[in-house]
Image (tube, rainbow, N blue to C red; front, side):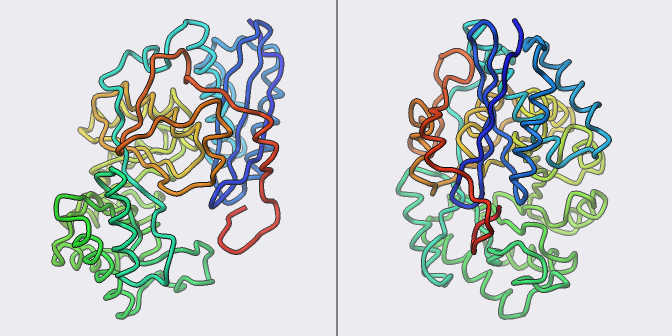
Length: 386
C-alpha cells in the first residue's frame, strides 16, 4: 500500500481556524487528521501540504518511521511549531488508516481500552454578558445542567492574547483585577456546588509573584480547584517547579509542549502534578501515547488540552481510552454549528462523556463538501486568531 495524495483544508472554527488533512492510498483506504494550532494557521496549513507532498509513495503502515523521518528532516526549522502540527495531523491520519486496514478501532491498536467513556470537562462556555461574577455564574450553571461535572475558566479574563494590547506588559494584575478574579471564581463555585471542580487557567500570562499570590487567594476563597494551569510558560520548567512548591493547588502544564522531548524537562523538574499535551501540537496519536507512558513513570495523570476541531477530540479520546493514567479531557462546550456536520456523524458526547464505538480506525470521516462551505478566515478580525 502506498500514499497517493494528501489533501488539506483550512476551516473556520469559533475562535480560530481548524487545519484538517486527508491521506489517500492506492488501496482505497483513507485517513483523516488535524493539525490545528494558533495563531498562524496558514503556516500550519502549508506545513501539512508541504510535508504531505514528501510522503507520496511512502507505505502508510510505517507510522513511527514516517514520524521520525519528518521530525528529523524538518528539525532544522526547530523542535516545535508548525512542523510539529504538520507531523501531528499526518500521524493521526496514518493511525486512522492502520485501524481501517486492521478492522479495529485505534484504541485497540494502542493496546486496548481501559475505558470507552471518556470523561470531559467544559471549556469555552463563558461567552455572554460583561464579565460580571453573575454572568459567569449563570453560564456555569447551564454547563452543569448539560451534564458536565467539571469546567475550566480564566477568571483573570485573558480574552485577548496579543501581548501589549489588553495585557499589562509586566504580566501583572491591578488590585481590582485580583479581587474581580476571586469574585468570579466564588460566584461560579457557589452556582455549581462544592463538588464541581474548576480548573483555573492563567494562560501563562501572570508573572511569578502574581501567580503565587493568586494561587494563595484562590485557596483562601475555598475554591475546589481541579488545577492551576500554566503559572509560567513551558520554557521555565525550574520556575514552574518553584511555584508549585510554594502553593497548595495542583499545577497543570503541557499545552505548549511539542513532543516527548519537550515534555521530559517538565517531568524531570517535577513541575507538573498533571500534564496536558495537545494532540494537534505534540506529534499526534503515537506521540501522545509515548508522552502518557512517560507521565506514568513519574506518577503524573494526563488531561489532554483540546480547544480544537472535532478530529482532535476523537483522536485524543482514542489515546485516553488506552492509558491507565487518564484524568480528564477538555471539550469546547460552545462551537460553530458545522462542527458535527463536517463529519459523517455527530460527535458522540452525552452527559459530559465522549462515547467511543467499535468502528475501525477513528470511526469517522470528513464531509469534504461541508468543509468547503466554511473556508478558514485569513484576514484578522476582532476576537479571532488567524
